[in-house]
Amino acid sequence: MSRKLVVIAVGGNSLIIDNNHQTVPDQYAAVSGTARRVTSLIEKGYRVILTHGNGPQVGFIMLRSELARGQVHTVPLDSCVADTQGAIGYNFQMAFYNEFRRRGVDIPVSTVITQVVVDRHDEAFKKPTKPIGLFYSHDEAKLRMSRDGWEMAEDAGRGWRRVVASPSPKEIIELETIRKLISHGEVVVAVGGGGIPVIRDTRGNLRGVEAVIDKDHASSLLAVSLEAEIFLISTAVDRVYINYKQPNQKGLDRVDLKTLKRYINQGHFKPGSMLPKIQAVVSFLENGGKRAIITDPDNIELAVAGKAGTIITQ
Image 1 (cartoon, rainbow, N blue to C red):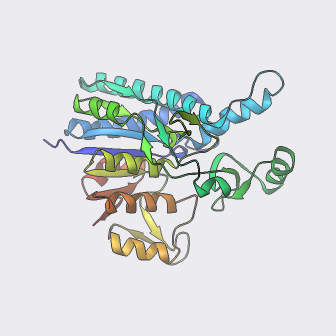
Image 2 (cartoon, one colour):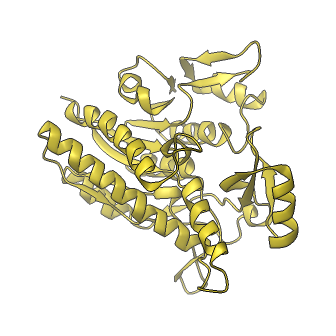
């Protein structure tokens, strides 16, 4: 039976099926579906760390904060990330508990509220690029930019979203806690939303900052730090495509690192969409990782078995 460590990064958008299924019960239903598929891996002996995105969920919190402006204090972005780590982690804990109970699996599940250090001089703070929150029409985006001072950008043909700084993750503060939990056989939910972005001040103390760390890059750092055998990114598409949504679109089943880099240079992957996932995979493989996978939630088990998704190797 396998004891390989798999880091599975679940996209925040994949926790919301569509615009008609955004409530907390709807999100729990999506979480439960992912938990069922991941439990099948656990039953085969894989050790699992699950990370997740939080873009839409942070957007909901910020919208509530805006609507309540003047009545209660607004919520800073780092606290929004912490809030979503707790809420989404709770949903995963409950979903795994219920699925484990149904199958007779006796494994503890823990969520680690995770801080991730970024460089306070990171160039990303000068040029925000990370999309967060809801999608807006062009007219709504113009209103937000003029009225609220937001920086916004068009997001892969899906609408306009607020963009914030996305500095590179440098250090996972709770790494040793995560390592100990995994070594004791637990399933761990960690680095939610890329981790709570913190910087070290001149005295070495931590302080939260207004930013969002890309969860795939933070998950890649976690996978490298723990020497995971497999790094899997679960997203909205079944595999990686070149010439995406064009007549000559082609899905990639297996690809090596050199070829993947060539596709990056040819501009096949969009910033704010597939490009960060591809870059996270490249970082994992360049830093000692052996196998990375990109697929959708329905194909997680098959992809780990090598029968679905895009499998990227050295």
